[in-house]
Image (cartoon, rainbow over all chains, first blue to last red; front, side, top):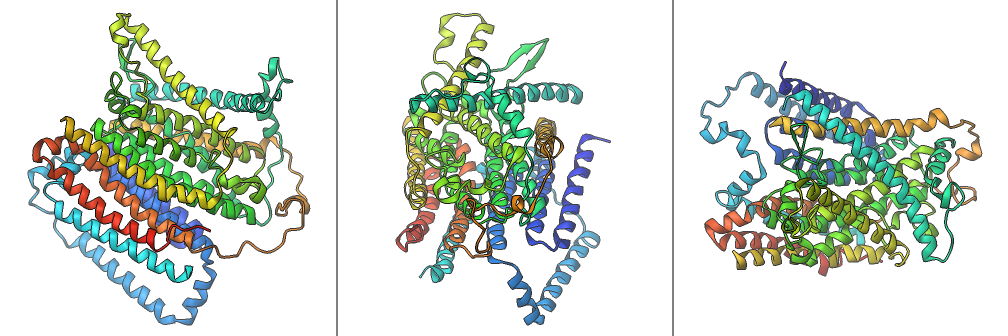
Length: 171
Length: 342
Length: 122
């Protein structure tokens, strides 16, 4: 068994088990903890795919920034209120189940009924070179400049949105 | 090199650095107490051994033999997990910091860094961003008002200063063209230290490092008059020791990072012109790395006993309204420098 | 490629072992004599009052949200910073201008939050 396969098994076990534990825990903080572990496992999988920059971004942005906000909300907004909220509106539960079912069907379709892409471009086969931060920088600021600037405006909208959400409470 | 050889060499390196860090932490605490005593015209620890030289070991044994109290309002699992996270983050970051140039031992070409990886500096940032959890968990799980307030204040402080830290590092990357710490050190040859080229970035990174390590004047999480012990109010025994150990280990790592990023790492300007033997040059270079780190550590302690604590609103103002714009200005400044001199 | 990261995995495993051993060692060596006074919440010797179930200021959430946004901004700056000298050699000043526009757009958001008092703590 090669090293890559062994590491793949370890990382995928971490991701799958932590994902299952995350949705079955009753304490929301423990769930969040397993979600962080899941992100770490995913980062390992990205690393095995030679996507080093994506791997470390996964940890910095998801595990390090977004989960901090999640934890702030869980710890300080008292999720017990949410329980009452769900009991008062049973339709929300049906809605949630429906969305989960659609996503599950999509995954099944992708796994069993779709063919792997045959048009592998020469650049894609050189994935070892294209996963480095240097390669991403070269592509992002020449060929993909427009999406990059658009992302800037998206973040601007998010900044304004965040302030307006919070501002109602400050005043 | 085969896999087995890599594993053995790595384990030896880890063992050396771990021992070195633990010894430095013990004596850092001792020197902090001695220096604070000098600053306040006292004697400091002088009972255990000659001039109190064995004091750190006495402290460790005292903490080891104390009762581990978990308050009954606490969430037991997360209460134990928090110091583990703090220790984990503090004892993994050193892996990418180079302490010297490559050396030849027994025919192997060995780099004086545990892991020379392509994303080196981002690895440090990723771990730093996980360090917030130690404090958040500790504050929330203790079931105490002081802990909760200290924990939430501290996590807001740490995430605020992470931004300016990130932008300061981007200024360094502009010049090094690589995330490898070894390449960053080599890009500062001669007197081209980043502290000289981009003084604003140096200052913003330095201040952010103080805030990230929760040292005075940024030690709001444990401001004694208002929050008792802050996030570690409810911790005792080795769990408290874990936080304590992590704080001092973080200080060492912050100093080593400042040295690597801004003070030329192991480099001594123009040492190669002296015509010394190769091994002697290497010894001097490794020595210079440790001297730089030692001076920064002294500076950390010096600041602690010279400057009073900031108020919380002042602290957040400095983070968002001063450090953040300054680190952006630094980024543009370095880019303009490159465009002028290229 | 992955062989480069083997030392990192070793460091992570050793650190987990070290952290767990340190925290658990107090349970082995220390005494265990709990009583209800000892296990109550510490409040400077007074009987604990109130609960920890109080909500905190919305400003902490604002800081966490702004942190996510600016953290993503920093992540976008790194690939540019690493490639800037090459890009400048190839496409000249537009390598600088493209990032400058991105930063200016985001700093508009920063200025908006600043003017609206989002960074005000009192």
